[in-house]
Length: 206
Image 1 (cartoon, one colour):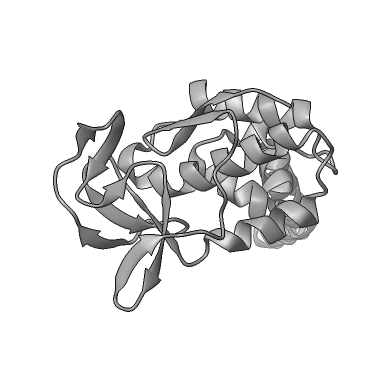
Image 2 (spheres, rainbow, N blue to C red):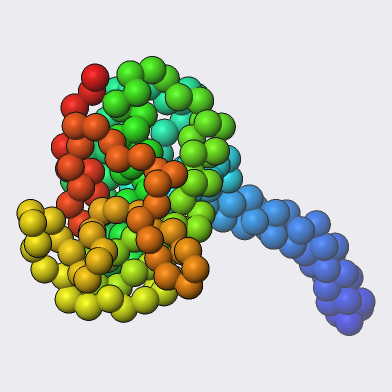
């Protein structure tokens, strides 16, 4: 009788665990997912919908929570983002030089334009920098969007009021022509703006 009672008790315990175990696993799974959504859900959703222009801003050092979501982007928003990128960017050092040069140029261009710019237009404008290079403050010429070094020019010095290394100037864009890099003319200089270390430091709307 005792053996039957013990056996019957084990069967009852097994049946109880058979429905409690899946319930416990479901609670743990949904509980963990809820915590993850609470901590990172908003950021993941934002990054999942980020376009090329948004990724450029991230690579330039803008914080994820500061990414613009409005379409089109107004001149006021462009100036706000430029200020955030200038004064509240995450650390990145020289690796962000190319991205920051392209991002600040596009933001300054949108600010000076005086009219809202659709996001698809900003993505199209970004393509202009795909094959261009910039001079980093350490004297290396790097590709704008990848940061890949292509040439070590030499030490950067102040010449004629500008930061230069050889024939290259910090803040200007260069295109590969006949085995060397020459100043690019497809990206026109911005009026009423000043570059310093590849960043627009003065932007006055029209």
